[in-house]
Length: 301
Image 1 (tube, rainbow, N blue to C red):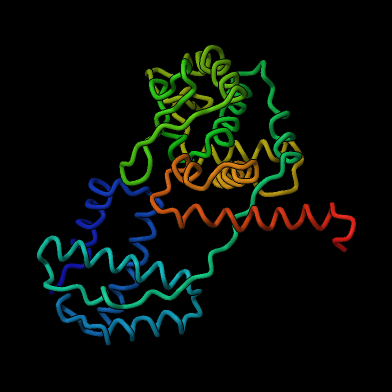
Image 2: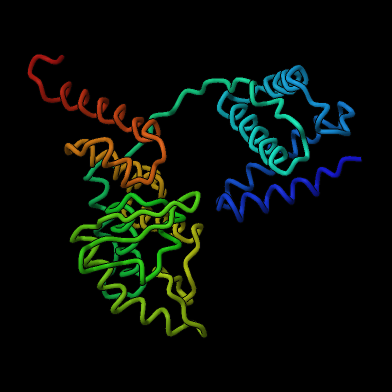
């Protein structure tokens, strides 16, 4: 009898150790594989070599019957394809029946971003005499000033910041590393926090840490903690839009392109492997330019 749970555990270990996948990525992989394994059990499949493209099409039909979006179906097929690549590598299967199954094209949503007026309100809400206020200011200046991911921000160490040349060493997705610059506002906020507020927060902990961003107990701030911090800042600033760490990343990219940065540079700064991942922001800038034109040109309306 096929031990699906054992194979899933081995695959997750592979994702964690060799692919350096995030907890969120692993969570979705596991959910997708659970659905796939349930399908195999219903079909009486006891050998993964039994699977063929015809059976995959039956699986696809079941997914569509559940009224799932193309994006969700695409992700599930991608998860199973990665799983079979792992099985091929481990010589558990002889071929990958999903390698020739086309993934349904998805409509890429245009990312939303913040306008400077909205950002300014967030920059003004923190009490710079308070350790947590200093931390929060450094946090938002870092996220907006560099465009790094929330996981990259959470993993930032003191030794990763070089104030002499204004750069950060970032450990990105898939163990990819890059250097990103930061500007004067982020520099001031970080220096204030590191030299004052962080020292006070660290005194509350019984152990030392090299993590830059700490919680109220002096322990490393989690990615969830970063999201909560931003939510509280939004509430305090009375900003009506929803703000999350990735929205600040979208805002960074959009503002860079709006101010004339070239696509390749923004790709490097964001740590995108493919230029296509960065190109979505050109749609944002075109939309932005059209709005400016419609609101500004005397004969636009």
